[in-house]
Image (cartoon, rainbow, N blue to C red; front, top):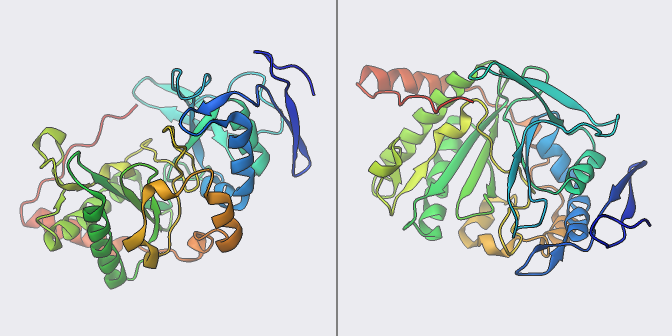
Length: 324
């Protein structure tokens, strides 16, 4: 071991044949529990197959906390100079500024450990892969509660989402958001651009709203939404809009995790039950609950037909979120 900046000795961890040096391993990242940087590394190693599957070959934004949660949060797109030569990246174009960025592209667990060494707490991947970053292969259903919406409502709406998915023949893979909501992912063929996938997601969200009008909103402007409603956020399918990956830790004091669930667990799930302290044992017992996601591809054509129907009936398409 060598002394790291700040005094605590660095440690070296072998991950699948690669050595990752972790500086300041004793730095407390989560004040509510006392969990340290090394605890964070060890958590991600304990769910290795799951986090790698969630991030595999996707451009990934890193949410870094160089001083722990008490310090400033940094949203990092570009991989810094001096990164190890084996680290893989993907180049992205950001039209608003006509700039490019080489983002982390995880293909192995050592890359996750390296990112945590670089003070990453949260991993936010794109819903497309580096083979064609402009063609998403993941449709994301974000059940985003407004401030006065409780988790009971989130659960009830999740049941409606599950019902509609079953009717159209899509397999949904639920997980807690790590905050107050739920996410459901559906694997899709990478045949459509971001605009089409967002349009399909909007059509689906409107169908959920029709079935639960007293609980769901698809209103675009936040100020116009009922504060007790649940917003089905179709905008998470827009280009460069990212969400915390399955198994990603969230930057909250109790170190909650965005935890994959079985559908039969949703009615009893509580977001606070899934933390870096509880997830390793759960993963060891159940394995990766999203393991089969790549084998269940859905064609979004029926949803695009719904979108056409909605347009004929006069439903406007909300403007796209501002693109970076």
